[in-house]
Length: 318
Image: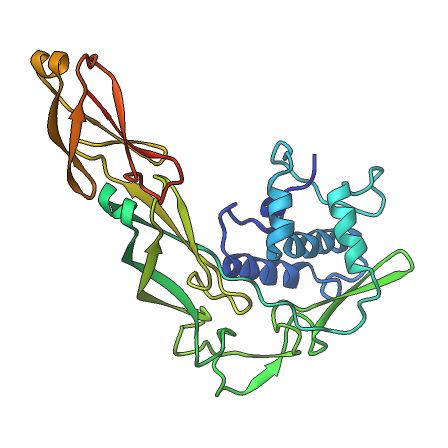
């Protein structure tokens, strides 16, 4: 079974980016090779911590990691003397780290998370299309610290984790790897004070009303995507996903794009024929009842579907 990155960083599986980064910083500082010289177990633990963070900070890697089966939940420190190699998932991550990444590049900004909301509409609104407003609480990047979480006015000091180099280096055999320091984001320096605007979170929550357009003939359960209206994360902004629920109608039933309505008639009308009016989503219309009409017989009114039809109709059963 592949190692569990959440267990290694001691965070829940639904942990957000800030919680994961905070756990990584603490553990990486505790097990950094410079703090534990000559300790192979600490070095192995440090490697696990780095790889776990590299996995969970990347949405694609995190999704792939979450889909893998996990072990029993117990973990023992790894050393270079362990007989078994790292699982393939972790070997792939190592191979990416050891691709000659010598310089300290600033880590890629994370994509903001998607938000979810829901709208309820009537069958009439579903037929014609409608525009609705939804209220969501969005996380936006703090304008004061630009998402860093630190006070831009405070004096910067050398990063405690990387020692002002902006990168974390470690060896694997004869090879040397370097990854950007997550504590200082590759800058080598950090502020000791939290940003007063966001209190160190890097983002602010604000209520926003967003108008959503629902197209005509929408299907119940449809999920609409409003791009760029999710949470901000420093990189690409997440999307707003809006689920559409169509309320049950008092007299109409929908099947695909057809609308069904049960019209009661008398035995005399069924036997001799007659003319009556029936309701539709666009108002009442006249319908001729032919003589000899049977119970449950379906008649189609062309041009009365939810979407502009080529050959369809709203159906009426007698």
